[in-house]
Each structure stands twice: as C-alpha cells, then as structure tokens.
Image (cartoon, helix red, strand yellow):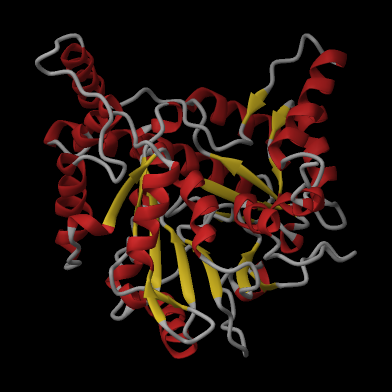
Length: 408
C-alpha cells in the first residue's frame, strides 16, 4: 500500500487563483452579456519582443537540419545564455559571477517551489506578509510550514507584516530564522526596499546564519536609483542569498517559460554535525536529476532579449505597462482610494473602503464594475482589507476599468 504525503492534505482545497476563476465563471453564467475586464492574474498582454521572435524562428530552422539540430541540452542551461545574463544583468552593477553559478530554468515559480528541496523540513522560516502564495504552499507540501492556526497563520512561519502602518517595510525579527523569503519589487503590494533597507536584511542574515531566497522577478520595472536590482549589490549577500529571476514579466515569456536562479558558490547550509556544505553543487545535482533543461529554442529567444534591438523592445513594453500603472494609480487616487505600489512595479495595492473585507471588495468590483481583481487576504493575513490590481492589461481596458471604478 502506498502511503500518502499527508502534508498535501494541509493545503487549501484550491489555489487562490482557482478560487477567483470559479467566482468569475459563476458571475459569467448569471451575467452573460457583461464585458469583464481582467486585472487580477499577473499575466502579460503585450507580444514577445520581435528580436526574440526572430531568434526563435532561426532556432526552429536549425532544428530542421541534422547539421544544426539540438537534442538534450545542458540541464544548467546553454553557455550562450548564461554568459549573456552575467554580462548584462550583473557585471554592469559590479557583481561578479561565474557561469556555474547561474542555472536556466522554466520560470521563477518552479525554482522558488523547488529550492526548498535542498533544506531539511524542520528549518524555521520567515515571510513578508502578504506574500506570493507559492512560497508558503511549497513549504506546506514538505511539512516545513507546520500546522495552520485558526488565525490563518502557520505555526513554523514567522510572519513579517507589511502594511500601510509600517510603510510596507517589514521589521527585522528579534529572533533568528533559518530560511527567509524576500520578493522585491514586491508581489503583491508593488512596493520596494531601498538599498539601506535591504542591507539591514543582509546584515541580519550574516549575523544569524539565515538563508535568503530573493525573488527579483520584477527588477526590470525599477525606476528609482536607490532601489537595488539585485540583492548581490549588497556586500556579503553572496554568502547568504539565492536570487531567482524570470523573463515572464520582463519580456512577456509567461507562455514561453524561461527564468534563472543564481546560487553563489559561497552560500552554504549546515548538517546536524555542523559541517558547512555548499548549496551550488547540490542544486546542480538536483537539476541534473529532476530537470531536463529549458529548450534550445526558448533560450535563443531569451538571449535575444539582451540584443540592442531586444533591449529597446523590452524597454518599450515595460514603459507601456508602467504607463498603465500611472494611469490607474492616479485615477484610483482621484476616486478617493488609497493606493500603493505602481511606481517601481506593475502592481497596485488598493485599500478597501473602511469596514469592507478583501473578498467583499472583490465582489463589489466584479458585480458593480465587472472588473476582476485579486483579494489581498489571499496573499496572507496582512492582506486583509486590500486588493491587488495588475497593470499588465491592455491600455484601453485599464482606462475603462478606472472609469468604471470612478462611477461606483
């Protein structure tokens, strides 16, 4: 008889966005004539950069000839993409990485969920709250999160509230944590940390022997000079941090799937006998065992993102989304709502009217304005009373959504 991993039974019956999809489907059944504007899930709407399209076409043609055909590629990724990433994403910021420290994957979500396999189930962990649900759910699956309390909090997680009261800057805990997840620019709140604020976390990790998983999927949206694009801009971070990035929101690869994870050779974890073990070779071993690599065609498309043409096209796309964010932020503010984010990130974090819960606010927008949002409480207890809106929609939809909300 096969025995179940009973930690899976601790998960909620469905993923947050599945719950939203069910509510929207029910609404559509009873309101078949209404035009819904979807600003909930953070999926992009602009096409891939033309440079990537052309590169992938060339790669497809290569697959048609035995002389240029590519079969299994390296599980870590092709050198041409890894070296291009280091040259453009890190070297200009004074960050030195070796090719063996960068691992190409099928996206940031996979890596953030899988990286925990390198660590024991009984590590304590900390998260900013609200938080991207995959961080918690992947730790629930292995038993690291503990048990769920009636207050919606897991027993083995230290929650670091990010609310309007603390300007969405999490407080440094007064005790040590083994494993810490940070996402900046932040999903869902759209807020950021300054260089000094991020340095405090690196200093904490160095002093407390804490491993930081740093999700930098939205770094391309940063406009402020004082907001770091990589945690490795902070001295000492390579000893305590793993950084995960994605081409999904930068270059529209949500349907193509490509990202990468940086595991510095300096970063280690301990055995019960206090032996320090580098995580880089362990992640490499994990990938070689469980991952067959990102496709050659996809990696050629990602490489083209860094070409002069690709960089200009990506910059134009990001500017489009950030103009959406500006329009939405200003329109919501004029309508009397308190809005955060939308400056260095494509997300807006909207405070619900006084006394209204997140799901009630969600229903209000869906049934009265025909707009799909994401209830903040779905990202954690501190998200109660907020909604997340994305700026990834079409310009006309974003403008129409603000017009509708302004009439409520």
